[in-house]
Image (tube, rainbow, N blue to C red):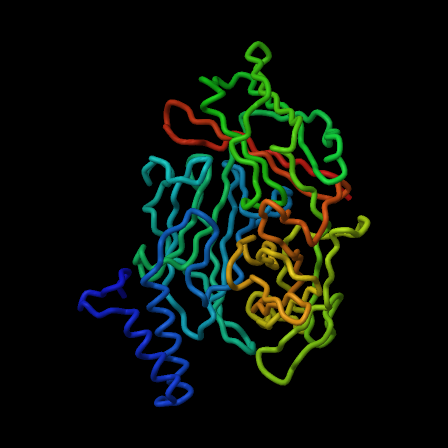
Length: 446
């Protein structure tokens, strides 16, 4: 398969796709052949346009439910994060097809801003940088057949940001997915100064984190230029505060102090996440309005939502935007017995002069066509194919001069959020950003 508009024979892949689509529309092929042609046409067009992105991306529409997590969750760390001396991260995903494929994994070390570092493979790995995914299972009695893949990620030698790249048949250009992981080696300590700071009229809607980093015996050369701090809310990269600068550098006490006096480095507090429970298709859970079993896969309608921007804060537990794959209708392994279903979201609202999305960890917090809502008859709606389970989600407005991302959800300083602070340092050798501090800072923990 080629990865440019023209293949080796000079054939234009886009013309092939158009020719096949024309055959489908004119009815000159059977329905089964039409499906095959359509899938082939979409596939070659997608393959022709694949470009490596240094973010959480799925490049093949058949790939669903990408998860990365620690095998030993008792350490309390969020997903995709591990200490250098105890790296037990796992990557898994589903491929919506009936036959096994040959997938491989490789690593790319990145700087704090997710640009490729100059480190070579031998500097970050003990083995050759290509790892076959050999653990796979076929789904059992599911409406949509799929193959589930799983690989324990091999340990790396240096702390930092790593882009995990999955590709097919040993062809590094045939991208399947990319996933960001963090490996840290704490060489600093963090102490907080007032978890929530008073920000005048922003106090009721924003959350700020004031803290100081103590670097002890660690030798920092030019900390103003070599230390980079990133603060995330609920593991989100899309609204992270990047390259946050210290308010004070105290070399005599070996401290970097971060105090936030204005809005620039504070977070909109948001609201507790909405949720829907379809762990069972026989006895649907909370916020599931109804099921349509007339077609396969099953279609689920989430209970109609409404804007919460002007409502008072209501406390209830959530998963900070995460999701859990579960199947309460069978005792078989959930990763291969759980069904994919169409989930219909519906938000009753007046029209907004910018794009509206439904998002969460289930779609890597990405603003894409799959989760962009359509407006019709007083409702924003979208249908998304999701694996059975329990999902947190929210409605997100594309920020603009007149709109806030949380416009439909509201911002309340009482909201429970999990923040993490990532501290990178670039030494003289190796000349790359290393993750030398990782700290979790819960706000309003329950």
